[in-house]
Length: 322
Ligand SMILES: [Zn+2]
Ligand SMILES: [Zn+2]
Image (cartoon, rainbow, N blue to C red; front, side, top):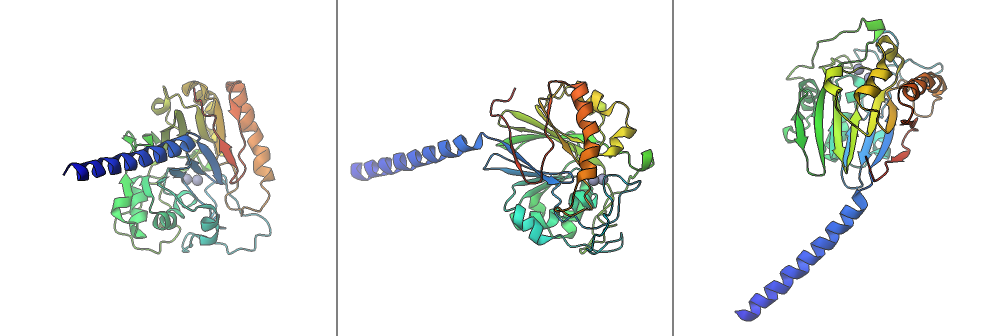
């Protein structure tokens, strides 16, 4: 009796010791938060343990352009198949698989194809939890993503996930087509894959996300607009800000953002590239247009650092956030 009790004690101590060592190891390596730009409005944010994706879109199909030009137009000499609204486009599995091995969470800002086309494939491949609007979740269900992988939000939620927390922020879409773009359409319940591009393009409302992760607060927008009252008082140290040309339709876009967000230490422009061009194509015109955004941010917030991200290049955050 006494002997077996002692053996049990030794076993428990050994196992707990091993668990503690393992825990220390994973905590040690997981304090460093690293961001990677996937193109369009897509990002990977990870601490080496938890992988969070935002609007991951790697297929970059030669699809229909957004109304009024937006941040996508077909490039000259593109020999890839051109897709129309009534076509079904399959995700580029090779592109996705070469850059995305795993994911725990996928945050979707809205249901436009340049934000959501690849998400069912990535969710099924990785088992990641998809967080998005009802419209997003209906697209996921159409492609057979299991209900336990879906968390439907409307904006206003503030959820705890253990390694990070997530505030879901009501937002609005980029003012495309010189402010004439408007959509209250939502992807309906009960759709069945495969869906045409038109079927996965009802906006379904737009969200932004504030991710609190290892002392950082990372605010992510999926386009060029925001609801000012929803962001006043947030103090992110990192802001992923829509930098496409349609922002110029908005009154004092960068100035109000910087003041409202209390001058974040780091701004990363997002949704500024031409997403109808493949990864290898030149983004020189988009990069040149981006210079005016960088100047706006620097003028409004001289101490803010702006990094123009390169596709798939790691951007490590300083471990001591403010
Ligand atoms: Zn959109
Ligand atoms: Zn978009």
